[in-house]
Amino acid sequence: MTVTAATRTFAILGDPVSHSLSPLMQNAAFRAAGVDGIYVALRCASAEAGGLLAGIARGGGGGNVTVPHKTHVRAYIERPTELVRRTGACNTFWVENGRICGDNTDVIGFAASAADLLGSCAGVRALLIGAGGGARAAAIALVDAHASDVAVLNRSPAQAQALVEELAVSHCPLRLVQETQLEELEFDLVVNATPLGLELGDPLPADLTRLRRVGAALDLVYRPGGTPWTRHAAALGVPALDGLGMLVAQGAAAFERWWRRPAPVEAMRAAVNAAAVGAPVHGSAPA
Ligand code: NDP
Image 1 (cartoon, rainbow, N blue to C red):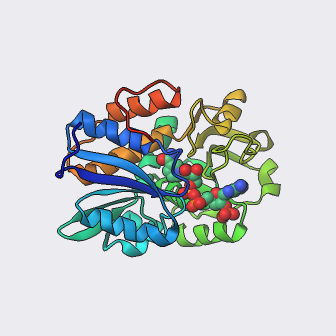
Image 2: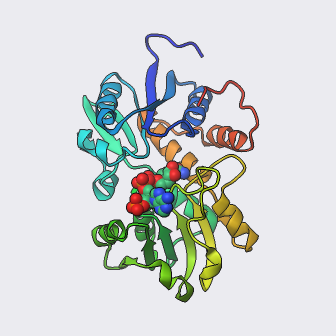
Image 3: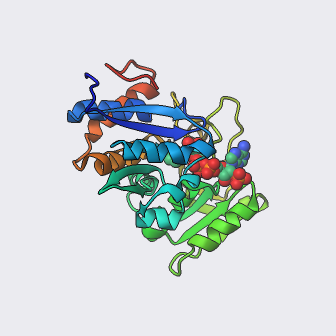
């Protein structure tokens, strides 16, 4: 692809951001769809993320926002979608009619990944480990899919309490659980919504053998060769998926916001799968 003055610039803003597969996945999507764009990763501090977002968007581009800036950049979004309003977080931005638009496609990504694992989330009893932006997206996806029970376990109970209070709805009263209660509990789905597993040597987010029953496990984290959480679940015979499916689904929804056309999902999946097993991806951009 030739980069010219007409090429639209997209970026993922985060810190850290070097592990992200989004540049590889989106550049593969841009090539497959034949659109004139380039996607890069920009590591930036919180104080810079909003200004960068606004500059890139007003320059005709767009992008994504990742840890830890998703909440902070909310203030720069002039036209938030309903999902940004409900989560208080933005992971996708672009400009329409001169106004900076923001969406939270993590909700869409989580819903797609949970549906891949369980078929339907209606009536599902789920445990979310973590109470940050990813957990909020997961909680909203589960509530909207009519899960019957969403419990939240987090290192900082105050964060989990805030999530439960803000997102509970009448058909699904979210609740807080403590580490000491695990032996009494059973869930159809247990989700790692912490960054644990991103770094080699991280402890597991929880020991699944302590729960009375676990139907399936989902990890928001992804890394080449699979994650410790999905390996832990698989060793117990529990079906599990890592964060790659969510990454592709949230990225496909973002692509559709930016380019107003269907995303080349198979090309995106092929790019991340090739990266996940360490195979070379033809013509990929550096991550
Ligand atoms: P946030 O920083 O918003 O939240 C992180 C959560 O994890 C907080 O609840 C935090 O607890 C908890 N946590 C952090 N470190 C530890 C630790 N050492 N031990 C126990 N708990 C910890 O991050 P996000 O929710 O945005 O992201 C979480 C993970 O999910 C990241 O790895 C991110 O890359 C991944 N993700 C993947 C996506 C995908 O498409 N696959 C999409 C979105 C996220 P506390 O409240 O105590 O600080």
